[in-house]
Length: 325
Image: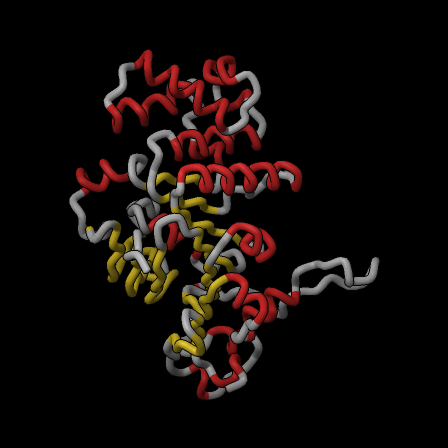
């Protein structure tokens, strides 16, 4: 097997708040190989986006901070890398599709100028050549009337079109890795499918690896090769996507799968849901946090459990109550 393109080891992240330094992710570990799509799935508030943004050190400042861990890209640690070197990798080698396209785009600048800026900075193109390439990229991401769109401002575009522009920015320099942080948030179902199909097609054409953040297991099933299930700041299960769906071992993974609406659910019947809610970092316990959600107060909530390999490439947090071991 080839070496990982991206190797994340023991990554821990926190935010500084009025209540102190609160952990949002702890000891996160995963690999992404060339051409592979890895998904991180979990409910809102589990720390998925914090992990994604920390990989390229784009956590909100000054509150967000990486407490420890390494993120190796081609063997270089992005966490300890000088900022000048990191800026040469962001946008060039690693592209990011942000969750909210209206916040990712500058409302005071034309669409074409925003895409061209990346090409001028990383590829050294002239303004004229960069703008011409921006139009080609808009056409590539299936934006209608790309030449006109390049002259528009973000407010003139729908949410789906703005997200396509963000994707065009992310792929402008043909990056080796694309980080997509819930790229279909706030889009209607039809547009969601169009955006996801576009991302899948672009990955297939370019051979780029990708990290897809989502709260939707059905999206992960159709997009990813490998999936990490995250709950309350920790990865509780990780496996190849087919293995995870066929043989989920952690109680949280099983609960997420059970909550997927299927054709077998009778009409007008109660929708499947998970009991309780994701805890705030203020309420994190040292041990199994899903046990705490289920109302368990015994020994399993007192000390953390390691991720153990139950079969090749299938890891699970070894809480005996949540795994049935």
